[in-house]
Amino acid sequence: MTFEWLNEEEIFRGRAFAVKKVKVRLPDGRETTYDYIKHSGAVTIVPVDDQNRILFVNQYRMGVKGMLMELPAGTLEEGEDPAICAAREIREETGFAAKEVTKLGEFFLAPGYSSEFMHVFLMTGLYPAPLKQDDDEFLEVEAISVEKVWEMIHSNQIHDGKTLACLLLAMKQLKNAA
Image (tube, rainbow, N blue to C red):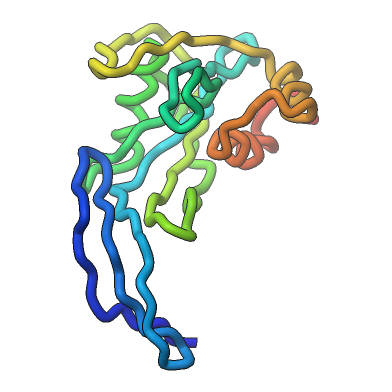
């Protein structure tokens, strides 16, 4: 099947993404228009401390009009190496750096309308190394045992999709994975 992009028009450009209208020729020859978000990509970190606890951040999210518990994450700068971005983001969001970094995988976050591609890292051997948080971030860090995290997943207490996907990718590496 062939989908041909005929043209695209940028409707909005923000800090992390652009919104575009894209005209596409479908496999049957008809033409239609899609809304598309062009995103620079992102990282998510599964930080595990020496007590086998995962560090989460609680932060306000516009889409849910409230606080959401998530794994630390951040947007890639144009052309930035994902490992470098992850090393910066863990320090900004949790105040820790990691001695060991393992790439767990990668995935598209919402391919129905966005190009956002997520890179996932497990970070262990944590030690204090804070960086200043972004001016618009107000984060609360919470350390939760791996055992308790699996209970929270199974009782529908974690609602962030990227966090759930990243924990699944980390399952084999985490002690006491359920």
